[in-house]
Every structure is written in structure tokens, then in C-alpha cells.
Amino acid sequence: MALILIAIGFPLLVNAQTSSLKANWQNLDLKTDSAFGISTEKAYNELLKGKKHVPVLVAVIDEGVDINHEDLKSVIWTNPKEIAGNNIDDDKNGYVDDLHGWNFEGGPKGNVSYETYEYVRLIRFEKPKYENADSTKLSAAELIKYHEYLKMKAELNEGLKDAEANSARCILVGLQLDTLLIDIKNKNPKVADFKNFKPKNDFQKNEVNYALNIYKGNDYASDYRKELDEWQKNIQSERDYLLNINYDPRSIVGDNPNDDNEHYYGNNDVMGPDPLHGTHVAGIIGAVRNNNIGINGVANDVIIMAVRASLTNGDERDKDVANAIRYAADNGAKVINMSFGKDYSWDKKVVDVAVKYAVSKDVLIIHAAGNENADRDKSEFYPNKIYEDGSGAASSWIEVGASHAADDENLKAYFSSYGKENVDVFAPGVNIYSTTPNSTYTAESGTSMASPVVAGLAALIRSYYPQLTAIQVKEIILNSVEKVNHEVYLSGKKSAKVPFSDLCKTSGIVNAYNALKLAATY
Image (cartoon, rainbow, N blue to C red; front, side, top):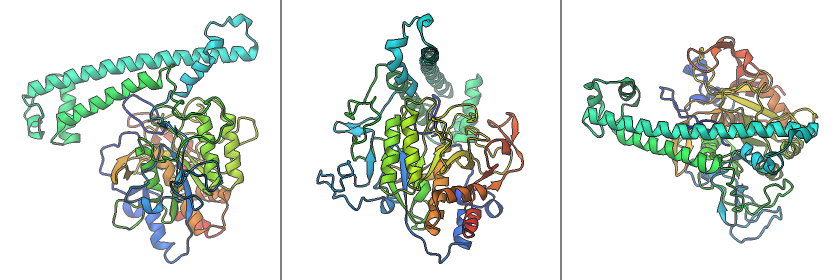
């Protein structure tokens, strides 16, 4: 699932936090701009002027990308071997009219918008064997699966209970809002109304504080009502789709969802029904720089390939991820960004084989560590760089956590997962302003935003130093971080503090200026 946080829980864009952070802060420099960005602008100004560079193809494996966005359309990949709209596989790669990439979450009948969580699919698959199994008659291997099945069923029941509780809470908040508006005697109060209002309970106190100190808008009630409606919609979709053991949308795709050896399915609609997440990610990497439109991406000479293989609403399927990685590698991508993840895996092996294939093709894979504030040294998260067959780890894979702008105890984004061994670096991931569908822009937060910062840096290095291999670029990025030598809150203010060096392998934030200086020595 795409790594965005919503009101009801996990991987999901973390709501952008209200703050005074500068737009483009991820590309600024700590010393000169007082924002712990990656010094991209400094690198362009001091190191890259007049230097030759070549285009680098970056695959954004995500929920879809708005290929017509005003600040992206000129950097969208066009397959040179494909003739648009003739319904023929001109380049004979198995994908008909794949002009700008491919969509593994669609088919002749349209596009998948909702999926179940992976563990719900696993319950559905294992139910015939383990629902009424006699545990005394199971083999040792079957007994392990039986207990995993019971664990997943318990998680499903808990998820359904939480959805019901959230629905009740949403209704209660709506009633409290109605009461507040009656007491204020204004159906859509303004700031002045809140200043003159004396709250009667904790809810009203909190809302007055929110309206006066945080929101400060003129459409308080209508905006609040929209948020409540969106919250209830998310809860309903979780019950109807994500946690529904009987829901299976793969008839839309037309494949056999249990056959991981299938490769040639899907359609060429790389935008899909909701390209917000992928468009935001693409802009961070390579929105056209200095064109007086929108924003500046990290890299100034990239080509974005859109590959749709994940969803905000539900967990991605391993076969889709594996095929997306293969598609990107086969069509020339030198960097792949993957801002998605899940807690269970149907068939990790098929993804591992695809990752090995991409590594063999000199591709650098960048992956977001997740928004659960989890220790990735202790909790499984898929896909990951560790091969299930015991053959080691992907040599050209970088795992990324999210950081804040201030070099203080709040530097670690409160939501970001971490791991001294399994997370490599941190990068800016809070209130990152970037492209969104229909030529709009917004700020979003998440490791989903941190990962493309690193993908953009990788592309920037490969653009100016094309002779470097993917493994060398990874080495440069990891060896050029800005080290952090102080403690940070593990999960936000008033939580426990830990040394930043406990959070990732390199103990630092990626830095473009340092990386490009180091790359020049190779």
C-alpha cells in the first residue's frame, strides 16, 4: 500500500503538519538556510554549473502518475519503440501501447481502485485448510501455518472492531460539532466568533484552540464537515474492501491472482483512478527546475516512467510488484522508487527474483521504510532487501526513513520507521510541497516523500557521473551523509529520546553537495 497516513491508521500520506517550513526546504542547506535539507541548491550553484549531464530514466512504481501535469509532462517517458493508439505491441515486449509505462492494477474492464490487505487474502486462501483443522493432526510445518492463520484472523477481528469504533467516534464528533455550532449560534463561525466564545467542555476547548491557533480559516464548519465525511468514507471502504474477506477485484484485471508466473496482463492507463500519491512522488524526484512553474525537483535531467502497481486503499500484490520491477529494468530504468509497503507477503520469492534481476541490470532501488514508527530490525516489512532464500541482500537497494527540517530533538519524523541495520539513511519527509493531479500542488508528509528525495539524488549523481554503477552510487550516497550526533524523540514530543545513530545504518541525512563532491573522486 502506498505509504500515506490517513485518519484510520497505517500506510496511508501522513497529513501535512501545519508549520512555517519553507517550500522546497528538502533541497535547502542547513547552514545557509536553517533547514536540514539535502543541499541540492548549493550543489547546483557551487558544483554543477557548466558540467555536462545526461538524462536518467527513473521508474516511479506507485499508484499512477498524472502524465499531463504542467510541471511533469515534459519529463514523462515516451517509449520510442511504441506507436501510440494502434493497439499493437510494436516493440514486442508483451505490453500493448505501453507509451509511458504500464499499469498492473488494471485490465480490459478498467482499473482496480480498492484491494484487500495482504493478510486478508492469506486468510481467504488458507481458510479451507485451517478454519476447522484439528491441530493434533497437523505436521510441524502445517502447525506453524495454522498458528499464523489464527494470528491473522485475530488481526482481522481486531481491525473490524477498530473500524466499528472509529465509525462510532466519527458520528460522536459530528454530534459534538453540531452542539458547538448551536452554542456559538453560528453555522459556520469565523475567528471572531471563537474569540468571543466560552467553551463548555474539553471538546469545545480543543476546537477553539484549533480554530484560533492552527486553522485560522473562514470555512471552519464546512471544512470540518468535509473531513468528517472523508473519515467516514475511509472507514466504510476499509470495512467493505480492505477487511472484507469476500472481496476480490482481480476479475477487473483478468489474470489469475494466484499465479505469480504471469507477466503480461494489465493496461496502459498509467494514471489510474487516483494518481495523487505517484504524482507527488514524481514531482519530488524530477519536476522541471527553474521553469517558473510549480516546484523544483531534485534532479534536473530525469525522465519519469510511470508503473502502476500499488494502491492507497489496500495492499499491493507481490506478482504486480515483481512484474513492475522487471518492466522498469527491461525498459531502461536506472533508478526505481518504491514508496509502498506491507506487513505480510504472499510470495516474497517472486519479488526477490525480480530484485535480483534489476540488480543484475545495474538498477538502483530506493524504498520507503514505512510510517508505523516501527523498528525494521524487529518487524517485517515488504518488500525488503533481504533475500528469503538466505543468499544475502540486494546490493543496490537503499531503505529510507523520514526526517524533519530542524536539527534538534524533533529531527526524526514522529511517524517514520527506523532500524540501525535495515534502514540505511534518512531524508526530508515532512511537509514536502510537490505536484498533485490536474496541475495542482500540495504539501504531504511520509517516508513516501523521503524515498523520492533519495531517488532524485541517485538520478542526479547518475546524470552527472554516468560511468558510475548502481552499487557505487549507493556507496556514495551512504558515505556522504550529514552525520547527526545528538538524541532525537523516537515518536514525537515528550516521547523517549534515543541517539540518532540508533535509527539507521549511516547515522545521517543524505546530502547532495557532499555526494557530488565524493562522486567526483571516483
